[in-house]
Image (tube, rainbow, N blue to C red):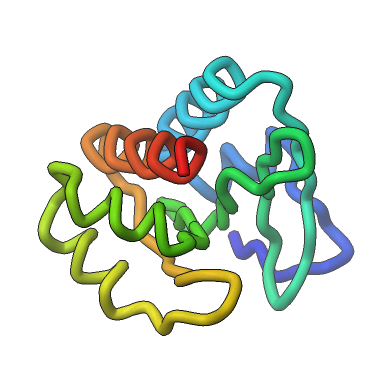
Length: 133
């Protein structure tokens, strides 16, 4: 099950088939972010593959990119968020990804895999950093 067919926007059934066990992680993260940063809008877009952008009042919180058996979370951190991430107690591998991301005018864009409940907790922490900055 791939998510690279522009003609088939993922619905709940397609997500469940493709994500497998990671679907509960996906749903939990979306539910948490929607509650924490309400009102949140969801916007599916396609560029080589499908991604779900969660936004609050026009500001992107996170991009969720479904993959077979897992998903990726993509963030763009400006200078303040990057500094806050450095000060936070995040896993070393996450900080390494943030530091390795090229710094552009709009910030550092990075993607992280989500396969476990611990990964979801890290994504929640990163979303909190992003929204506080």
